[in-house]
Length: 296
Image (cartoon, rainbow, N blue to C red; front, side):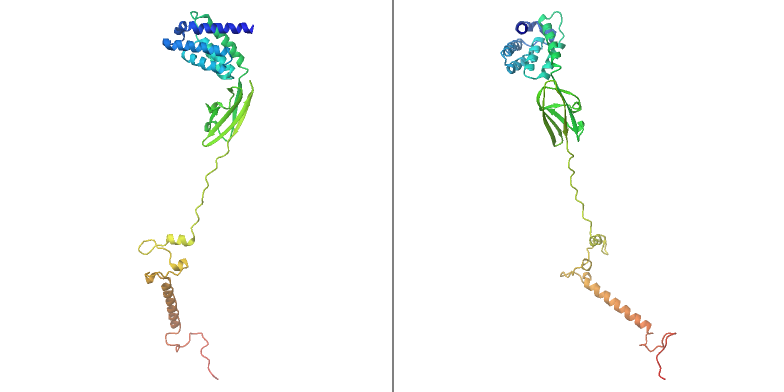
């Protein structure tokens, strides 16, 4: 029974490719030129033949090429079958769905309606075989991440939900800035899986605290000269003996130390003279003093 069904499929596919493409053009869009139509017809025939021989990769390449030029249900059906044999169930499902959506009219060949019926059956059968994958992000949000499966970009907003994927080993990759998190996962037909991808917190740039200024540096910043210019610390303030040649006398620390000593000494002498009445000590003592000692 299966063999008879396969032969019938081959018969109507070849008939459509060989002789019915021209009839279908008005119903399915702008007709290609004669040379393109002839090339699509030949390529489609080769694709069906390779499919029957078990060369599904070669069949898929030719059938997809022909289908891209001439969109008709028969070519779409065979293109979907080749994809299914290659394990590309998601792509095959899409081809079957396209065939189902063709607007076939009563004027179109019966073989087109048969192709649509077969595509519907194949589409329904694939529903339970397609795997589903969802992604859980840790340490990042979907808005921050760009996402890809097997190198093909996937909208990040959809990754939290079940994505239809082909069975087999799939490589997931999520990227946030320069950080990339990837994981390979192997799925059986119809398996549903959630994969967790974890992002680590990005290291904060180290901050170097400025050293607090020393009291001497603060004094140097605040000290100004008499003419309004900033003055540096004197050698005395810095605790150093600044005796550079050519430096003004008034800028030498020891000059002002000497002046300070003279002032202090003069003040002491003046105070002593004031207390002594200024007469060399001959004035009478202050009232209330015991006075000089006298003999008996």
